[in-house]
Length: 251
Image (cartoon, rainbow, N blue to C red; front, side, top):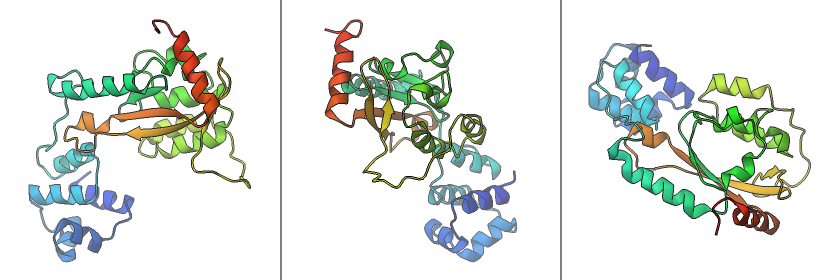
């Protein structure tokens, strides 16, 4: 895709007008119109400003620069690169500190990078092939051989997962076939949709939070997400503490 088309597509996807984007990027609507029509070739700094103004992920910013004929601005390091050692240390610390509650780290496509010991509680009974190297957390959650049979509110919970996969249409289509129709709710929704999960420790009611490296300038680091599960009621908190006490190596 050439640069004018790539820019128009990203602007339209975010539903931002030419005028609004021009104001954000510190240029005129006329100049932006010329850029989008191919009548004007933007400099590298302008491409970077436009990408920042669109709030594109770092990977997409690099793609936009390449489409304009410029080298990428943001590095993409391997997760085991020494430069990311402080980030790995931070991740390991957060995962351990969150016990006895489950937590995991995934990369941009949802592939599992790391998890703490408590994660085994919510994945018990899942097929080994869904938990091995390169396992995908979204597939693990919604596949019939994964967590799905134990999720008591699967339709409701799955819809929230599918919304997060709009940038991965193939994976979204693959998993959508496993999701039952969601019946309209006439009751109180509450402040959050909990994950209601059957387990050998009883039914767990869990809320989730997602943490990212907000100031990351490395593509790999910017795409990491740490998802932490928290008990939504005292019974779940007690069940998770009991599970941690029985875990191998627990003191």
